[in-house]
Length: 330
Ligand code: PMV
Image (cartoon, rainbow, N blue to C red; front, side):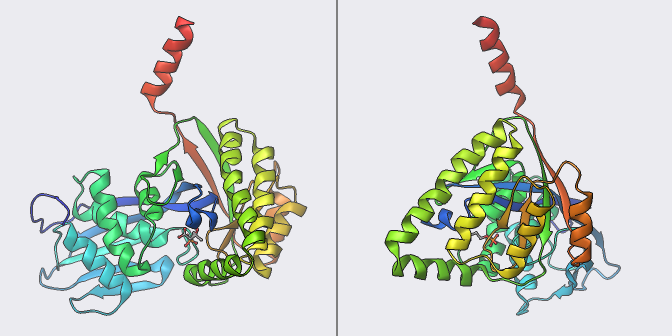
């Protein structure tokens, strides 16, 4: 049980959480290599207000996800089950509230929508909780959605920023001044993380001598990509993303819709694009071209609605100050 104090009957009026995008290292992360993920500032914002009847079940609606449910005990709706579990882990109320969500994140597209929901719910119920407590409460809901999640999504949904993640280790937030523009290109094709992960495992078991080096290369792309991001070298990062997409295709996790949208990005001037997350559908990401209009028009013609995001990370003030002091002393 999470050591959150008290037994609140009320909710905070507003709570927010980040979405998530995997920049590099999906699939190879399953085999112990690092992955790099970023918090999407256009995450989820929940607002809560008391219902006139304090004995009514909690209502949860997020119109962008077509979600409009009551949180009734004994429900079999996975979102309701997860929401009830998170609220109760935070000793939140069981009835008498309406919760409304606003977001530009698509759901079930590998952009961390479920972790954004569980983090924001934990924050509504326990606004005083520490970051670790919030992440722990989110994980209780995430386990209902995903079985055995790695924890990456909850950590990024709560912290934002740019995070290096190794399975079984605490995620590390990169400490650098980073300004990374990205276009997220949703294909609208549904996908299943479990199916894609199983497919990679089977191919690796059949062809270890071929697939082992592909996973090694995907892992190497993370270290190179991290250096390129810190050096603000978007052309180099783009090239690393392009190569990663080809490597992921060798694992058979791309899909015609993903190849199509990645190809569109490249032919319209993007320094680099790749699928993000499990693949098989979901989203691609692209470094935006200097003039993105032709790409945006080409996407519109294909019914793709890109989401432009700016991943901004400010270096922790004390680290930056220490460095300035060290430079002055040299
Ligand atoms: O699409 P997502 O967000 O479910 O990403 C899955 C990332 C994988 O590396 C494919 C699986 C995993 O557990 O890390």
